[in-house]
Image (cartoon, rainbow, N blue to C red; front, side, top):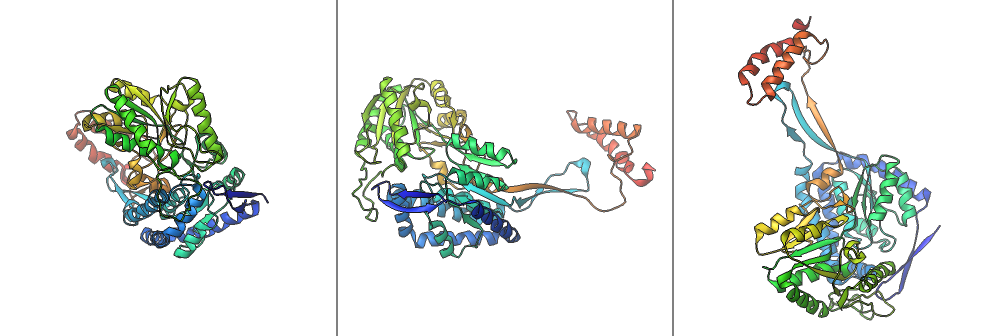
Length: 519
């Protein structure tokens, strides 16, 4: 069986090997998932909610040891591991503990007057077994956020972490230590071949987070079995900065949003459009802030208090993508104002600010997924919207302005799934808001009501009484019925409504449905 080597991206130190799951393991995991799923479905939503709180309790109690593992495998700072991983998972659990029973409760639906005497309702039932495939940039969040939502909806979950940051044994340790329901969420290790084996098991839904290229491959494999998929893919997020902003504040916010997690975030700022009157001032402020950021070094012990602002990148192949895009941009006329080259023999890439970038460059169009901030200028609101929308991606964006009416107007015009005003990425911090994108950034939503409902079979129920009444739209069809339905159509749907005609039509229409009249 193939094995995967895992290294510390800060130090290059070998950590461990993980064995890729074979066919027998994959089959056994799905058998256990399908065996336990009816038990999950039989629980009330409130009971499932109490179960996920166990995970939160464990994360709070053991956060330092968990942060050690996250830092060792991802290279991120301790603060980022705490705030962007553990805190976000616990925040989602806290929200859904109370919200899930309400969101998933049966709902009454209005019934048309023509169906008088019947009741309509909507119920939310489990899909069955959900497969969650996660990326390497936020391994804890991308496991528990979708997996616990799927569990709350009554599903069993099979989770495959990235082979780059598998956190071998940590997920199991968290769930076992928390006393979480056995087999409700199972972990399978391996690369894309293992992912293909998991899809061949025909889960009832796939939730995939990763690159657009990999998302297309997952979608193609799922299509063979008509498995529904939810794709949370890449982004090329734009920040639009108008001239009426507090420049220092906006520059600080955008620098953070560009370089958080070493830029390895789907919704990091990868294009910044600044209105011309403040362009030079904004660029100078951003460069100054970026140059003052404290970047970790390989010599720092991951257990020490967090005294750095940015850690290392996580994967060598991603550093090479950043380097290639930068080199091509510089060759085409772009200028690097700070940063631009990794620390020798390492995965530490400094905060990099670039100007004179165009939409034609890969740096202006393709996902970079690294600590690079291209800053470009615009002159009008319409131009800013057009530049931001000129992208194959549509995940997130931000608008910065003192004029909140204009900011919201621009936000509504952007073809993305998430927009923050006078901040960036902040929609992700609210578990009540849906998260997802459009265009090459994927489709489907998780978090909020839409997240739980997306992991549910949304079933419509129409309830009628058991009596001797024969429905008027059943056989036989007669000229009289035809005429009466025509009169009803006139009464219901012509504007203004012909209520008198309706009332006159209602009695014979209703009586026509009786056995006596039909006979």
